[in-house]
Amino acid sequence: MPKSLITGGAGFIGSHVVKHCLQLGHEVIVVDDLSGGFEDHIPGDARFIKGSVVDEKFVSRLFAEHQFDYVYHLAAYAAEGLSHFIRRYNYNTNLIGSINLINESVKQKVKCFVFTSSIAVYGKGQLPMTEEMTPVPEDPYGVSKYAVELDLKAAHEMFGLNYVVFRPHNVYGESQNIGDKYRNVIGIFMNQIMQGKKLTIFGDGSQTRAFSYIDDVAIPIAKSVNIPEAQNQIFNIGADKPYTVNDLAKVVCKEFAATPDINYLKARNEVLHAYSDHAKAHRVFGNTTGIGLEEGIGRMAAWAKKVGARQGQEFENIEIAEKLPEGWNVVRKDPV
Image (tube, rainbow, N blue to C red):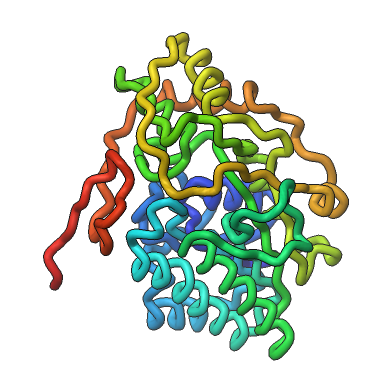
């Protein structure tokens, strides 16, 4: 039985990857600091260890105690827009934490390191985005993800560490943190509707994204270590059809029998149109689930209605307050 480490396994995508790895017969150890995840999201057959990948000594002890066959690294703070204002936090969490894991994976001869990157690495590239394009990320989050991709390539060439990189985008589904006001627009919309609030959209809502149902992302990630053709490759992964945010709002409102009531805020600094080509992933991993936007949102809405609205929390330790988007409050803790 292969032993797999899944970081961020209490989070949204991570908890679904845990479920699918268990179904594939893996022994799974989940590491999460619970900063954005929930322990009750972790399937019961997995072992949970609370800790942060940023803690170098913790990571070193973890690898010394366990001989992992595979590492699935999903722990990250994935808020592209906010990353401009939390640069130190972004690089510590998303880059340095990743390097701690890569170092130990090299030393412990891990068979394959699976990394969840993002289409944020592309920036304003041609559409649709393809794996052959040279990334030019627009925000610190994309920069950190691309840096990890480059480091994995260097670690493979120097030490033989095999890897698989996935670039998912706009993933949604059951168990998403709908209380996070900085990311995951579908969850934000659902939470706002259940609280009787107006939907908030930055700009005029004409920006487009291809919203990806969770199973079309988590299943290929989980099974990638069993597919030799996937090793040392990069894959765009997710839905093919883009929608405007205005169209998305209508679909979400329909599931809650609500009339769209939208508060349009000042546009923020973001890529207006982002969707990618998935021909390479389809060739290697097969067809997707076929779950379209309306069906996927219907599934997520049914789950959201059961769990109810979540109280959103302000992000603490905003480092730069200048040009902070409308509605994002500045919260700082006193330095220790």
